[in-house]
Length: 172
Image (tube, rainbow, N blue to C red; front, side, top):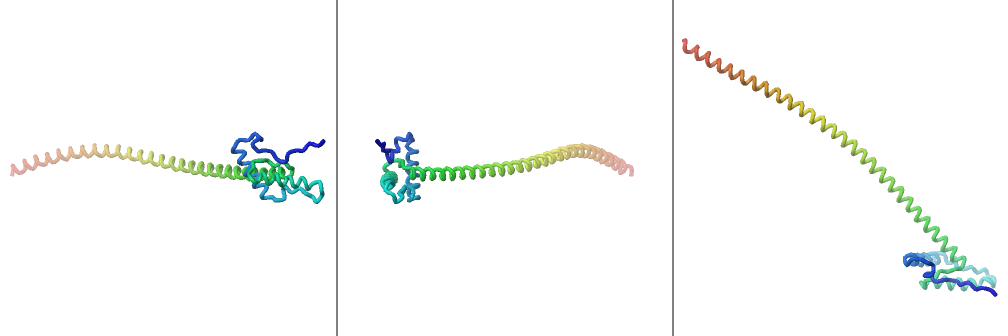
């Protein structure tokens, strides 16, 4: 007595979420439609013709959106290869994005380092300017003090001149 295995099973019995079932259906259709020879296992011999016909029906049912996973080795191999290629493409994209992220991070870090160096230089320059302003204010205060003293002496000298002139004009 031989046990007949089903040629396909409902994809809802695979323990997948709805979004995973949707992805499985979509990629099963892509895999089977992109490789038309995948589910054709016939080899002109009588024993494989029946398998090929049932495989074709299962593939047709799966690709027509009836929600079944084809169980023949050829279809499963094609689907497996498709998912391997898809995972490889996803992995390559992740690696590319990771490299781009690292490049952006390095560039941003370099720009930030350069900006910090420029900021440090500007801060040092600003401090130098403030120091010069302080020195000038100190000099300004000294000069003002000297000016006030000179003004005081000039005022005294002018007063003395007026007194001398006043005494000299009286004597004449």
